[in-house]
Image (tube, rainbow, N blue to C red):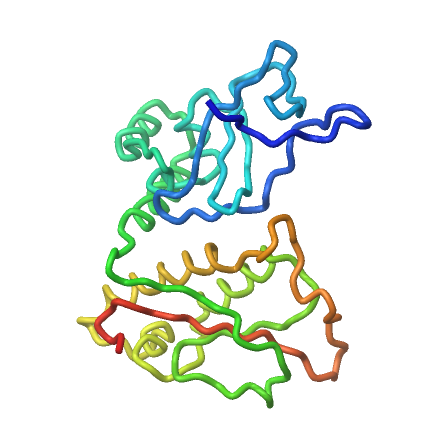
Length: 254
């Protein structure tokens, strides 16, 4: 069986645990959630020290980012890390588990409602509709040529990838979508025909998933983007980053 972790540098002693990523890519069927094997001294197989205590679980996404937590079971670890069961490479019966947790009062009812909704969203992602998001330009607004496809823009300055993802999600939530094709219209939300409502909901969920999946560093471990751009001063023109949403396989795809 292979190692669970890469070796750490112990030049100045073993590090305490491993750094948790701020968030994980929770695309359906991609997250590896496993119980960490600790030796009698509380070290993992890469040399990081965790101590002795409750079982330790680690979630690793397909980018190699991890989050760890101590929990009584793998299912509870997924809940506490807010990783939908359908996102796991080896999913569990989340409906049965949520019902058991409700009956036993294991977790807060509102938190269970949120987790249940998150699981349903991931589980219901349409197989035929493929959505991705790409960065196409960084420039002053007057220089952006526009696009008929759905597009988003956010201020560009030195920040983390997690900050970029949050900003893009906020734009989607507010319906601040550029473009003038049918998918842009559905995401803008103000001209959706009754028969398109289900498609619009599916598309919006796919866009959120694409942001979490695609807005990632090209080089593993790189946490910052737009490194050379300083935040704009009041009254100065703001450099913007532009992203185009690509949709394939849907009814309006060419």
